[in-house]
Image 1 (cartoon, rainbow, N blue to C red):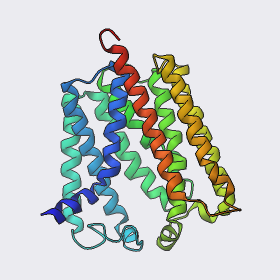
Image 2: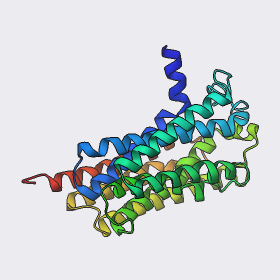
Image 3: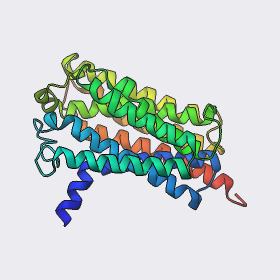
Image 4: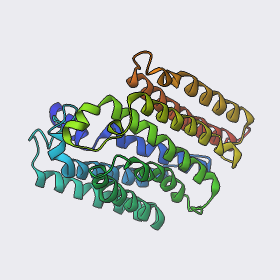
Length: 292
């Protein structure tokens, strides 16, 4: 039983897809300043759509997954599940998730959820086989969950407050993925994915990634600039967090002189993104709290 559950968690990429709900919840908090029980079902719907999208991705890439050490044990590439079974699971998740988004979230969350599904499985996944730059248009996927959370509140989608947060999530995804690419460059090359690691030397790519990390830290400061935070302390902490990640990730600039721990750089960048999400969420919750 435990093996089956573990296999299903792998099929829906639980560690990755659960982050979708975290950023979507942050988007809702930015809009409402609080969490309410009524948001549970639309968030569950979004999670189901993300699960279904991940399962479809397995179906689309199972031939390549089987060639990579990191992914060859996934349920479909290992033979634990048949393609028709994965398709059935994915369809059930997408349909049920979309229904929850529509009936308990509204038209905007429903449309945005389908857009995220289409962009990930219809645009980004095929594009990964064709170009090393797929993550740049693919970054739109990471910026949609906060917008979905915001849209559940019924507020206009073009509000600069949420757009600044979405832009931060978009920029963060590029160095996040490229650090992963360096760590598993041999695996990706074995499967035939075009990778930026083949376009630049390790030293060049490390400097490029560091530039994107700098851009990510700057993008976080757009949130206090455009009304995304309520307290000066929050803005100070965002600046401090940006200085922290920029300072520690300077190891990337020393690639020609010593070995760089790309796993550590990857983890630090993810911790920084989580810090930003938590800071803006807590700022909004505390501001709306009576007597704060």
